[in-house]
Amino acid sequence: MVEPLMNPEKFFEEATPVEAFVPHGRVVRSPRKTGPLSGLSIAVKDLFDWAGVPTGAGNPAWLDSHPVPSADAAVLSALLDSGAALVGKSVTDELAYSILGENFHYGTPRNTAAPGRVPGGSSSGSAAAVAASLVDAALGTDTGGSVRVPAAYCGLFGLRTTHGLVARSGLVPLAPSFDTVGWMARTIAPVSSLAAVLLPAADLAWSKVWTLPETEALVDTETRQGVGTVVRSLGLPSAGLVGLTEAYGGLEGLRKLYATLQGWEAWQTHGGWITERKPIFGPAIAQRFLTASLVTDEEADAAREQMLRFRVDLRSVLGKTGVLVLPASAGPAPLIGETEEKVAEIRSRTMRLTCAAGLAALPQITVPLRGSDGLPRGVGLLGPAASDQALITLALRTGVA
Image 1 (cartoon, rainbow, N blue to C red):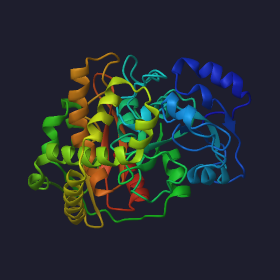
Image 2: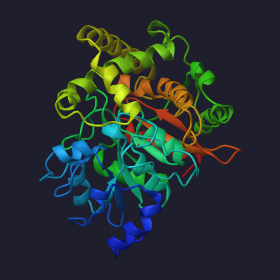
Image 3: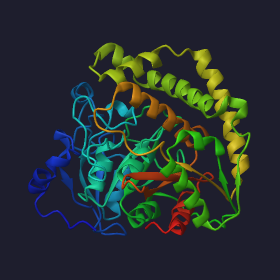
């Protein structure tokens, strides 16, 4: 556990090299009450409203064009009432529309678990702050992998919660059908502590482990071996899922399906503001919003219909007690300054791995692993709806604590 902050000004000065916190969010909030989270320090992704502190959403134009919140996001209120201290607003990729972790305006938070490599986004600052032991845990959001991927890149446990299970009021949205609240920590204990406060209890008698053989071609050798190690550690009957994605064009088809619907929702959410305000975005984010603006209502309707069919398919396979083990990312974090072509290729492979949880609105926890090269990687446990707390307990079987 990180020691309580005695001098916030000194803390943020010493934390500067990690570049995890936005300039307008270097503040600390003491808990309102004592409770089960007393003694825990939690960083907050700069998408959550924090009373009296600006919400920047990773873009200066957003910061300048939106009023300072007068009320806390629902999840922040719950944490403060349970004894947690809030420590700083952490850097996010612009409007959470990336899984890389490089921000055109605020820079790239340092990944101390893999120096010289990106921390992953869009919860980049949250992951960096936790990896550097600046805080005990950090709030993030996960739309297409924005908790799971930075957790894998930074050697952390990261929980994407069941869609809609944690209140999203006071949260800047991106694609509401997929946006979820999540959190990260170096060990599983803080992940479990936050879950006990924010999520309903779930105690499942897990019956079977599924894998998706299609993922093997998308990942590096170390990650592939990590999936096998995790499957064996769970001590449950296992089988490969064959044919699950065939009707959708495979995992690449599901990725395209996800990207279509996410893009349409992102433009419905922010297109008016972008058209009126004309904010400056980093090149990748700008291109992403341009592509999103071109998605038609008909394309979105067709994508939504397929998404709902896939949701039924995957949930039917899992039942109430099955778990799907799959890579949390395609491999270790890319190097800072990697070519655009290489980054795009890694993003495409990774999104094929992460889109299933979003399309099916299911929870997934990233379990951190280290390869023989010393670099962090992650393996995901994806479970039935509302099995979040049971997934955390299941993750303990891996022996990574």
